[in-house]
Image (tube, rainbow, N blue to C red; front, side):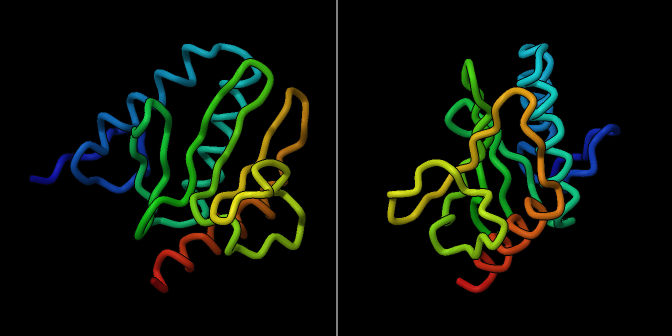
Length: 136
């Protein structure tokens, strides 16, 4: 059973898409500080990187997928973290990955208050993750 898209959302429709987008909206609003603003900006960059990206809500965090999980968006007291499910297999010429570097599969980017978001590099990373998921 397909669901309709939110009027405010460019995310693809699919089972649970409306609910997931609303939960992500709620998380951003409840944070109400730099973490919410950062998560909102990261979300916009991720969604703009590929029209096939689907927003999901798993493990009580936002998840962005296309052909498999691209990344999760976690928020902590001092960081907003994007964890790329298959990050160890992705090219990272701009050196965005700065966390979870010793794992064999995942890689993460920790964003701290006031840190710049390199939109072009993040877009390239998301597109590489979509391509990797599509190749499997």
